[in-house]
Image (tube, rainbow, N blue to C red):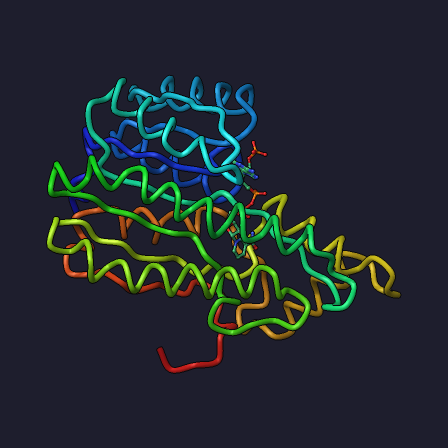
Length: 263
Ligand SMILES: NC(=O)c1ccc[n+]([C@@H]2O[C@H](COP(=O)([O-])OP(=O)(O)OC[C@H]3O[C@@H](n4cnc5c(N)ncnc54)[C@H](OP(=O)(O)O)[C@@H]3O)[C@@H](O)[C@H]2O)c1
């Protein structure tokens, strides 16, 4: 199946590792030109060099802290300067922490909202002028299955994921007339540094190790294992492609069967 991604221009936030890096690699493999975004320029440059060597496509890097108001505009401007268009945006930057609600401080809530929610909103706002001009755009927000099935120990992430899903659905109706579609992926547990940090945080002050904490999560998941980042990247890249041409305002839950609903 031709995904129609060759020659397209994509911005991927949170691209230095984890799900974002896996998306960048799949896009590069499809011949998409990719702009990698995260805070650590060295990590981005290392990945960019590997991807352009392996797949012969242009890969650029922009170091930006997406939890701050200014950088989204700069990312969009640098992409336009270098490539002239913005066809695809994947918002994968995020790293909210969990815990018992009454032990979670203001700073944890603030950082979840500033990075994962407002970071994505600002990035969408920054790419929309180009996408509207082009009358073409594909946007995917990486949320989390806790957006629809909140977890009592993961509330900052659950609440921001729900907000991002609401934003995705609402905005889809506004931008469709410009040929822009916007969807979301809701990952379940995925083997990345974020997941490992989450398990270490939840295990702290309990009798469990991080490994045992993970096993307790796995007991609730029919597939009984943590996903690999590439298993999230595939459906994300599908939603960026012309193969998903009749899909907008929706999300795909990829969680090994964890979420208990009929959708
Ligand atoms: N892994 C899971 O189990 C899981 C489950 C559900 C949802 N998710 C969601 O999936 C998304 C990706 O997570 P992941 O698991 O791939 O995590 P990860 O491996 O820890 O990667 C997070 C990415 O975000 C970037 N980042 C962090 N803070 C940033 C900031 N202030 N500004 C710009 N970039 C920043 C990091 O790069 P730098 O450090 O270089 O900035 C990194 O590239 C997140 O939104 C997460 O909530 C993950």
